[in-house]
Image (cartoon, rainbow, N blue to C red):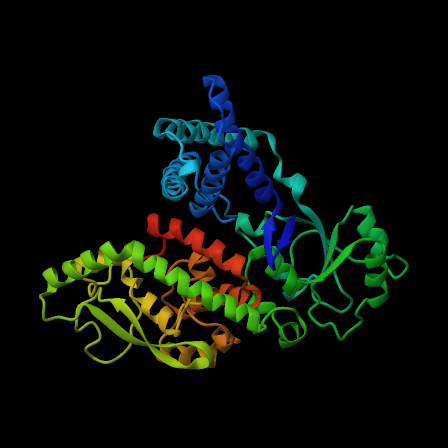
Length: 457
């Protein structure tokens, strides 16, 4: 089951986990102070709880795609507590009235960490995820319906359980489980009520042939939700599936709009975030510059300029720290970076792993070529290639490219046409649904990508 908040879908169990842990984070300081006979500073406790919740989110602990086991959860929670304590120290430095005692703050963090791990263990043992899943009836059993039966990732199936597939008249049956044929005297509504269905997913291969308008209308009026396959997969998987997408869904559906207010707020966010990142990472920028000059000599360029495709297909030069040898593409042909690429320098291996090579792109953001969050900009040669072979590829250029983005969080580094197709599905989801809150969420979760070196090559 999912909730929709500012155009973004949130898994209900994840939302409940965050709510419970916020109460834990608020309760830990109160409990500890009462045991020690202290008077709790409510303002400080609230600042601590909010910072800790943001830090837990930054470590990916509220991500539906988090696959870490107990050891990984404890590690991430521990790092989150350290990050939260640092945030509290910085905030209360400017607001002296909220400043806690150092020992008190450390005790808050230690107790909160213990209670968080305990609550996760109890939740995993006692809470049945199936209780929160929507029961779904799929109308259709052909090629489009098969895309549902082929969902393999646990994160893609967290919100629903398929009760059965109903074969549409004249449609080939391609799914291999729980297929039901409705007799002429039977009603779709009666079947849905018999199976205690919450939602019907329309997944017919050809809607022009015997579309069950009356039956679906009866179901809708009986309180059973009806949704088309593309929207259902978008909601459950966080991507726009190309194999079931049709132009009318983009034309008549919500999203894919250029709202002037949204564009203005995004630009303000980009500039503020870029300036903040530039200030925070200035020491790393200086150290990286020195490291590259030491390894390759002062005469070799530190920065690397490369042509990329941006908003509306306009080409610009993206700035990066040079992480490969100067003659990496001596033959003039663009190449994908590969795992263990021999062209990568020693300094390059480090800065690519932790994404430091991307830092100069803050100047692209300040200049207006890029956004802080958005689809990754690709090279014109690859865009031309994919534009001819991958459907809807050019639609990703309806938004400014970004330093980080939804596709970078959800899919590892891509180095083939297949990878480009997978990442495009996440990019289209972002282009359709991007909001300021969604940008902030992506920015937070990028912290985990950087700290754990996910996807770097």
